Image (cartoon, rainbow, N blue to C red; front, side):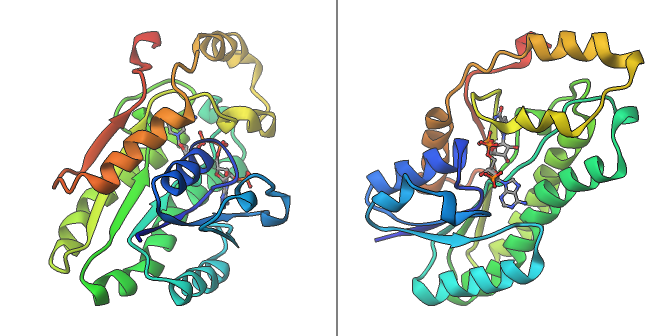
Length: 241
Ligand code: NDP
């Protein structure tokens, strides 16, 4: 029985992926910031829930070592993400740092913690959830998109670096998906010069994909045995920009 370790499994794509892999007969280690709030995944067999905030390096070390002590891990899915849509000028230092800390540094930290396990067993696969925005530029998501471009480039470097140990790295780039991702936008106060353009941009985003569709592509990336770095998931959102 194979095992997947998932970050940000409390909602959206992470939760849909946990459910899909469980239904396919995998063990799932579903990590989240607030495990005590989870009620759905706790009902399913072969799902272990562990606490994990990807901006907390100490907790990453303890949760990854706990997971490895429970079972051999085959796939580590870096899915946790945080995004804000506004002009760069509107962002506070905290707005900027939180996006980079969660999306890029969180992915780097969790991956680094897993490498010894995968290197020693000479197998294992990292799948990093990026975005269509990690391949294309959109207005008002410069920092978020920047984090996803960073994960794409970093993943390419790492895929070469780890190939000598038989360890794989892949990215899955979803298009606009119906989740709570940008529900945190109240964390930023748009400046008046941009408000109308931002409102227009937000009104144009009509997520056409479901978390379940993205989970299917993550499953394909985990199981197809292809030597392929990049996967695109969901219905393309490019047309709206
Ligand atoms: P959700 O907001 O539903 O899920 C985001 C998940 O990340 C939540 O489980 C959230 O946990 C978790 N998370 C946020 N910050 C942290 C943290 N510091 N430590 C651990 N977990 C954290 O959105 P999605 O499902 O859409 O997002 C999943 C991934 O998909 C993200 O990487 C996102 O960038 C990417 N993506 C999404 C797209 C979309 O249109 N929805 C498009 C392209 C990519 P909590 O419940 O605690 O907040």
